[in-house]
Structure formats: structure tokens, C-alpha cells
Length: 267
Image 1: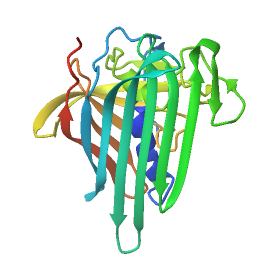
Image 2: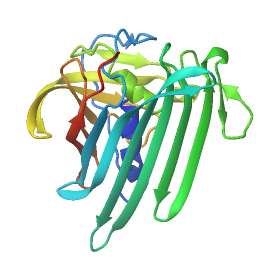
Image 3: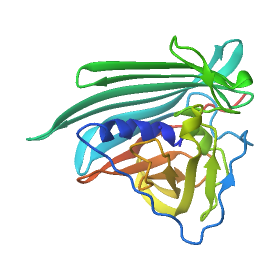
Image 4: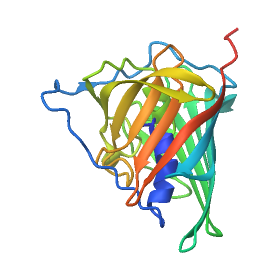
């Protein structure tokens, strides 16, 4: 879904497009400084390989499923070393007047040298229907291809829905700041905006976390178009996604960290 932040965003967005319509509205920061542009390449990565986080997914007070966010390792795409990111969700709500089942897997391959997207895929199983997407992204030519269709224009230093989520973990986040990220590989989706709205201590995965609270605004997203969504990132060098909350028409959807296995140390 931000990514970054965008990756989890798009997971919950699947609920938004179904019988769990998530409408995330935007609360602007009054008197906030003018938006700044995020750097093209992160200065340091808070992850390397084999990082794995598991999440509990709830609709209001009801346990609805589980989710994961992982760095699977380093693959090769068109001769380039690439991080392979994966996000999954499996959800089910079984109420008297409402039943819903979803499985979703998103994967992203990102050049380790330039942190630009090379490939993005998604497989979604929703109420028995399967939908697959596959994009090949060519940063050197600012082009992308949707499946077997003709190439289309992209942007400089492109990122996809899931890699945006990881990228957001790598950039400075000062409370009160607004950050523009004009890097989504589909030009019409830009800019992705991050508003850093505060700090908060929350309990998850059996411990207390000091977190930075981020409000993402993605104009083409059902979930984040209006800006009511919030993402809690650990206020440390790891920048773990501790929690995501999205307001629904009735109640809310929350993904909260259940367990976390950090990356392997770099060699």
C-alpha cells in the first residue's frame, strides 16, 4: 500500500472496496511548513534481508485475520540485484448480516543499488474470485509495462505500492513536517504525501513501543485519499511498522504488530 506505508495501505484498501468501505479523511496540519521532497535514495536502510513481521487484523473489536510484511532476501531481476519484499493478508469476517473473505499477496523487487522498483506483482483472492497483476518497471528508461500491454511512461526513480512503504522507513520524519514523494511508477498517482503528526507510546508484540505517527495521503487510494489513516513507526533505527489504523464507515480496521524478527546483520 506509503509505501510505502503504501503496501499495508493497499491491503486494508481491499477491505475498503468491499463491504468494509474504509473512508480515510484528511486532517491538514494548520500552519505546517511547506512540503519538502523526500530524497531520491535513502541514506541508510533499516532492513537488509530476512526481516519478518506478523500482524493481527481486527475490524473494530472483532479478530478478522492476520498479515505479514517480509524482506525475503535478494533476487536478480534483469541482471540487477534486487530486494524482494512481500506483504500478505488473510482476512475473514463472519457476522449475522455480513460475511467477507480475502487473501492478498503483494511482492516488489527493488534495485539494491538505487532503491528503484524493477517489478511489482499482486495476487488477490476475494470471495472466490482471483485477480492477478504484474508490472515490469524500467527505471533507466522511465517506462513500465502492465502485463503484456505496450510500455507506458513512468517517472524518475520509480517506486511501487509496496516499495513506497519500505522507502518511507528510510527517510527523516520530523514531527510537524509534510513530505512529498513524487515517485509512484504511475505518474497519475503522484505525489504521495506524508504528514508527520506526532509521537505516541503503544503496546504491541508484548512490549511498549515509542512511535512516530504518520498520516499518509494517496489521492488515488480509497483508503488514504482523504488522510484519516494513521501508521505508527517505531521511533528507532529499525522503523518497524507497529500499527496501522483505518477508519471504516462503521468502526475501524486495525493492523497491530504481533511478532517481529529483525533483519540478518549485513555481511
